[in-house]
Length: 306
Ligand code: NAP
Image (tube, rainbow, N blue to C red):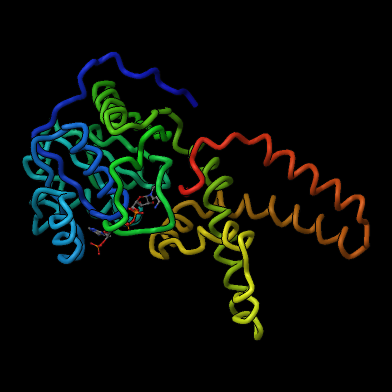
């Protein structure tokens, strides 16, 4: 993974019209950060629910709404797709014929190999304008009401360029993210998906499964009443959006299954020590895990997920 040096440009790039497709947590935060950076003269939004568009206008997140993705993207010179990953391909197909040849299109999806493939299928020769991106910023809270101007400040943004992307589009995407406060790294999409299966997708799967297992026990509800900070910290991400996470698991199932094997092997090891009463071996396993966790320098403050 290569971290790009901050671009030399003293001024952020300027766009006439930013189209935000999917005005939720990520899309709304993109719009707010773009406004702070004066990145575009106008910000138009399109989202599946008209009520979301109304809420985004009322909160000053977007300047106005569009009735379709195509309408929003037509005439835009910067388009961001901030929808669940399975919706990215269909949306690109819808906007293809409205895209100007110099418009830059980016996404914020949590998986990248599937998005790259979907973009190539949906856009054909126009795929060269689409630069796949994943900001490592967000939270378990979804919806435009949680959008924040500062969401991307100091956060890593992984760009996984398509082979078809000319350098000018990758450079422009880099400058956009830097203007929004991000720190850009460039990665191969498969490498991205393998890494994020380990450090994001599997932990989400485990958090969902763990809460499911406790809540479904006959005495689960009364146990939950007693839960404290450890439970809260371990399960915060289990409150994340189901559609978004179904899409992530579907898109990256091979890598998540591979990580699940590593995890099952580790759990089996811990379980064996418990069963056999090998307390010193159990302590040694805990010690190794505890040290790895202490050695890990978090790049994100405690209130942020992914
Ligand atoms: P979110 O808050 O739920 O926002 C998604 C928005 O997209 C919602 O407003 C939603 O609908 C709209 N939408 C869904 N399908 C659509 C479609 N077909 N056409 C138009 N709009 C559609 O979710 P989010 O957390 O911002 O996630 C968005 C993307 O960011 C996902 O791809 C996710 O993988 C990625 N991501 C998330 C995080 C995170 O921590 N949350 C971090 C990094 C990347 P309504 O109009 O009905 O409201």
